[in-house]
Amino acid sequence: MTGRASGSLVRDAAKRLSEGPAHTLDLAREVLGLSGHAGAAAAAVFQLLGSDPRFLVDADGVWSLDPNLAPLGKSLGEVPFAVVDVETTGSGLGYGHRITEFAAVEVQGGRIVDEYETLINPGRPIPGGVTALTGITNEMVAGAPYFDHVADEINRRLEGHVFVAHNVTFDWSFVSSELIAALGSAPAVPLLCTVRMVRRFVPGLRRRNLDEVTRHFGVKVHARHRAHGDALATARVLLRLLDEARGRGLDDVASLEWYLRRRSRRTKKDPRQIPLALEGDGPHGRRSRK
Image 1 (cartoon, rainbow, N blue to C red):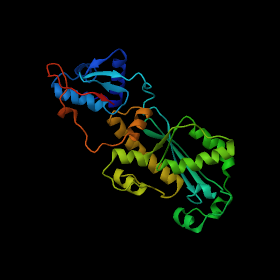
Image 2 (cartoon, one colour):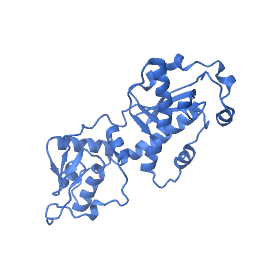
Image 3 (tube, one colour):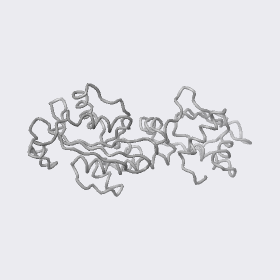
Image 4 (tube, rainbow, N blue to C red):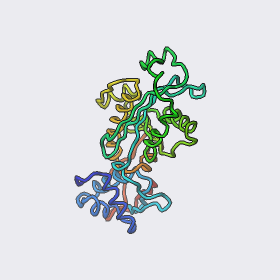
């Protein structure tokens, strides 16, 4: 395969197929620059396009674009991600718990480009157990702004971004609830969970809490259980996970979301072990809707 990034190769394949269907070996030659062993060339094409639902292949080894699905969106390298962590007075949003600290780390183009953090006065006492875990005391937040005072700034930092968190449901539920209370609405943004990404991309990792995940990737956490420390560590984990996604041919948010939603199969078929109806082969083939 050529030295080009797989993401750009996916886009080259999509551009070629927008002109009309193409045989596996034609894609291997025109997109990947492969003209050698037919089985190896076919395997490379399946590895590149097989995880994206927009690419279809029929029993004759002819690829096409699914007309019912949206085209490739902005590449993962161009998308701005807001990696968020919040500390709260407790885990039960339904019990009136509030945010005590908010942090957002912006990731774009394979690097961290901006950071924001603030303590927040929750308007209610912080339980002793929470203080023992986070180190955030009632005295620390007494002079901090209420969420209403920073809502516009937080909303600005989230709009137009993919909202990312380690266990995104928890952080988004608190942030969106506070934004709705303060501003009347929360931005309509895609949600991306690094726990879910780790589950798919690092299936051998038995525990997926932030301590285990950062240890696996060799990421240091400078202040565990503080919003900025956890958000920064999660952002660095995200950078490694995005590299893994691009290595699997996942080049935009839509294909990444589809891949994360898709159930893992217990046995993965290797296209090199499947008879393909390639030029000069017999009548056996495979139909696959990716």
